[in-house]
Amino acid sequence: MSGTAPPPGLVVAPEVAEALAAGAAVVALESTIISHGLPRPDNREVAAYIRNLSEDGVMAEICGEVVPDTDLGVSIPDYGIVRARVRWSHQGWMGARFLQPINIDSIANN
Image (tube, rainbow, N blue to C red; front, side):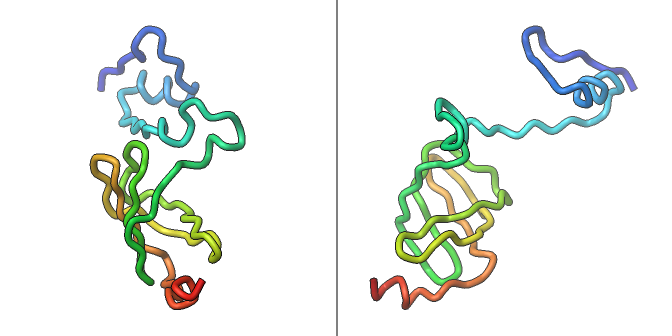
């Protein structure tokens, strides 16, 4: 299998350069929305506005797109951070399913 070099100006990790040279498959993940223009440690947070919340998941308005099957933490005011998996993302909206159902009644009463 014939290899390729990264495009000029693109800096890649040594193991990625080796994989490219060997012609192996390389997957690149876009992470602009979690780091673009934000200083550390805020570069790991993304603004999201919860538009629909259930015991099983959340629909939120976000800046950008999130790759489906990405695991993340959803911070719910007066409840805490809930682990979820992104099921879909399209044009600034995303849907995520909580890894464990939450007690929606405790949130509704706050």
